Image (cartoon, rainbow, N blue to C red; front, side, top):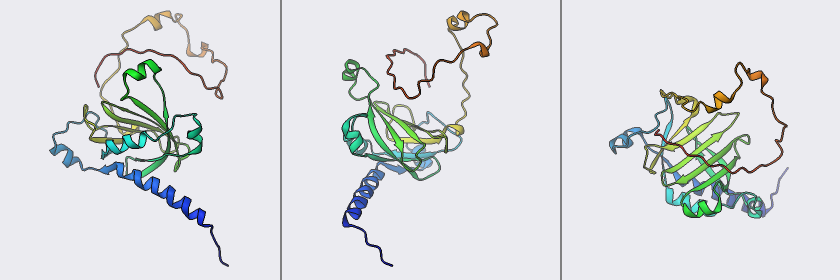
Length: 218
């Protein structure tokens, strides 16, 4: 029995493969010894992970073609980006740009861009990313494979990155609460069981306006 496939099938397959293959050039594995010899000081040191370099210029060129979320273009075209995984290999995500800043603030910081993506190889995975003057950051959430983080190898540089699972990072730092207003407002002796959950609105998209100020170092 012979099977015949339409030529259009091969065209679509070649185009899709070309997109994915082209974006694979963004990342290259880099040995720890090479980075140490370059006098890079690590800002995040997981117990296990992967060190990679990033072609930021090519990434920005790719991001410039990504449509805004909820736009008609975001539903018509898929912009595929492979993301390195901690123990080797890549996972592909369909990427859109999302806006977290109000228009006035966004105009003041045009170099700050935020993106999100839906997993293709792992349909349960989602990714959020940002590009700032401090480099590229990403977080992958997946109930199947766990949480993956991508951070600059050292603070203040956007040349090399550490890819690691959240479970492989053990911090020695502790958090100390300094503002007691919230705890003082709680009734004395109140148990967690006394807190009542609100109505379920999982199918409703809500937009909030939020301002945060913080200090500290990491």
